[in-house]
Length: 278
Figure 1 (cartoon, rainbow, N blue to C red):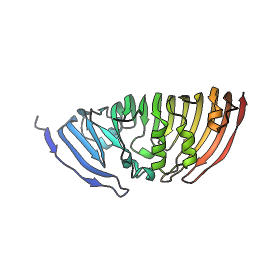
Figure 2: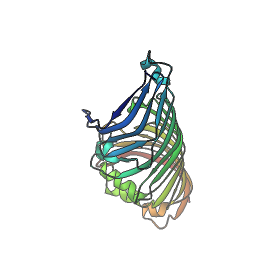
Figure 3: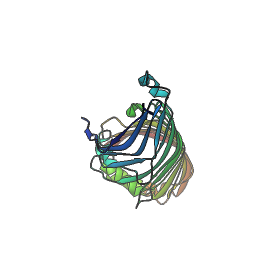
């Protein structure tokens, strides 16, 4: 077809003022009058690497494409070998800028730039038990900080020490708080997540070494600050309050607790209220 042409981008490097660095963009682009096909597509951002299965963008013609792009069908799959490094979240969460943990990605999305369905979403670590899986949707991803994220059947398994490592790197909380978190041991969370990256609500069940609970959690992370605000409530029929408070006389209890706390680098403050059945 005389209207077709092929572009082979071997390397493109861009650094944005916020600190995000596109180290490599590479792929074979087949551009025609009715669409674009991209093969061997790779994006390296900072210390993160993303390898894509073939991408196809299909549209009737190029006239008014800037308006049509919002509704162009997309089918995006990250191939084996893709991973994200926490330090690349530094421009959004400054505490992560020196944290070089890598997490493997297995992701499949389809829809359009304004509304993407999450068909498969897995995050794993090579040497740690941390795993995340979910389905759902991404809405408005052209503006990442305000994009809406809906994750259904979210399952997270981890070890409390791994969570403490992330909190310490982000300068959130103090040693006393992290010692309390360490008591959770291996734990799992199963539920639904809805909101924006730095402001969202989670509702579901949590299973820990100290007992099990149902949780409603609303969190906010002020942009660029090493702090987090948490509010919500927890209901449990069996939790080892004696271990949490270092009081063996209390043992296992049931109850419901509401909380509204702010946690920063040096301390945490707020209120906790509820009842306990012993």
